[in-house]
Image 1 (tube, rainbow, N blue to C red):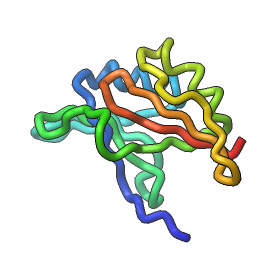
Image 2 (image 1 turned 90 degrees about the horizontal axis):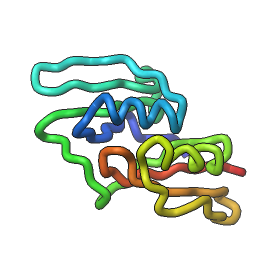
Image 3 (image 1 turned 60 degrees about the horizontal axis):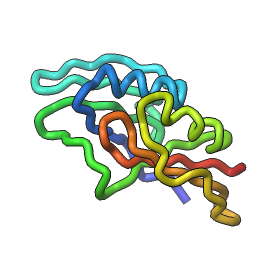
Length: 121
């Protein structure tokens, strides 16, 4: 099965706060991209399908805990979940066993977005 996701945008009201949160929780590195009507911090490898996205601050992008949920891949969900609250987020579903599909957790990030994480162990 191939991965059809090309790009993910996670809305932020405070771009620097969001960058600090995701850097602490997922150890991400970012590249700043400034557009005429928005600013973004890109992460991942944009030349590979399913591996890139950005934190974006613009009038059209509003953080939300409702709707679609983006999941980040982790080595062990417990490691990243343990960093969420000290980074300024709120863990809402702790590491949960989903049988043969591994484990997941969910949190509200520093901006108010509901985000997930997944691992095999």
